[in-house]
Length: 503
Image 1 (cartoon, one colour):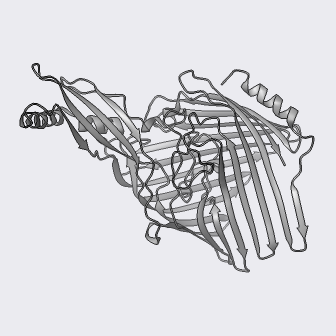
Image 2 (image 1 turned 90 degrees about the horizontal axis):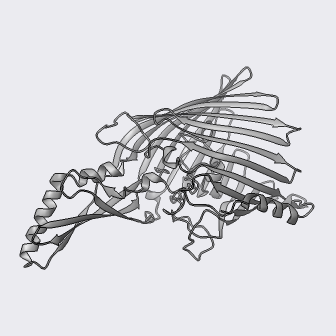
């Protein structure tokens, strides 16, 4: 991206913007229709020369709401996106799909939410594409597993923006004792990832360029292919859902929840073809290379959770925890491949290759061995955390601590994002308003204690009018380990600016 990208984009936007924009509103007796939205332009500058640049992006968001009486309403949210982070668009289709992980189209249209509400005295029903918000913690919610996320920006954007709406049915029942929310999701909607050549593609999904061995073969080069997801058949057995019961007890808002369905987090298999080639017959010189096929893997989990919130003086206390049954963790790809290509395994391959070479009369000079390495570890685990908020005038401060615990951790089979069976993340958020809330300063940070990495997100937002806001900020990541959730993106520091016009 050219150096003048951010400034030029903002100046052009201000120059072209109409002097006043307003929402459309239609009212007639018990019926109403309203149209809201925004037009946003943004530019991002990569601070590290080793990562791909990103072109400016534009987003047009339309929010249509209608009421045809006191017993119903509907909402439709559509986003049209000119996405600057898509390097090489590979699809002619316009709409983002609900059955693909790699959405490489640009420009594109995304149906963010689209549902109809039906109201009765004791029960509400919502049918359509929905986003859910279970749990009390910010950004990291152990009990919130109904929606998958758009991870094309590495998870650095806000949670509400990351969530992918799921076609679903929600029934909410109310009483003086407790409120009950039941959700049914007929079909799993996969998470989204950038393409491998884009700057926010997860480093943990990239096999090493070569596999180091302690044999005469030396380094084994690796070629990688990425496949998209193959969803399970559409039937009741493959559907998902959950129930959440909420109540107010002794000054505490408390909820208990249960979810069953597919794990919303990315997990992959890595089928590998190992090819042995005879390079020199007289010297019996061999060459070995590996071709790894990275394929998404989905598995069903059961999550039992609780969350609560209460106030103590000027402080708000929040807590949340979940027990995950049958959760799959991905083993480290480099360690698995090294294990599959250990010295004894190489000797077995070469011996089998030589037998085939001799049997063919010296014509079969190459042989491929297919390996299905065990990339997954099935374990029960727990994830829990607590937070505290304090608001004083125009200042707010929030602190959180979230920990994931894997009781059956095996140090001989290391997994991503967990170190010695534990991962602890501390987050802090500071917000300050000035000038009658027209100027907003945000300082957000997260620190992983086990992996010792950190992300820092400072930003300044200014409202020129009620309809026009500008924001400038940065995303700064520091980390040491490639297998850490934050550390894998340590080269992705960036500065950004956006201008939004609401209507």
